[in-house]
Image (cartoon, rainbow, N blue to C red):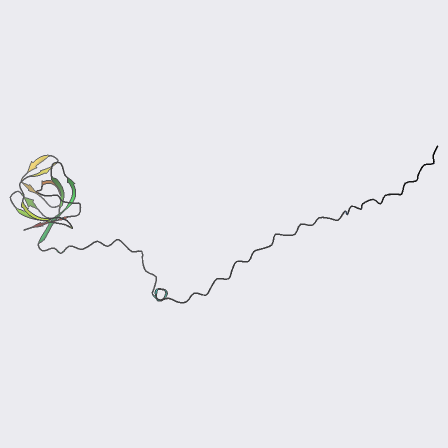
Length: 140
């Protein structure tokens, strides 16, 4: 039998057993805030919240009420009175889109026809033209 060949010893790979240390996450720096130039707006004091501007209506005459509702099918307006009103008097209704005069022909309170209405009452009034909420009723 042939003689056995001696094998050369194979060098074993060394496995490092170092501790694995996790590095903390790198912080990302935010860019520095730029120095703002003072503007004309910055010099003014802080403004209050703006309300929607409503055009004011020039009114000549004594205000006797304000329209609170309008019923287009029957062409009637609900008016909150600030002064007494009676059938036969002439009134003027003025608003942003309405401006007309008429005589009071029919008034009602709770579907009951009346001839006179006192201050503070809400009346139903037949009108000749379309009116809108907020329109002013004047005595002519």
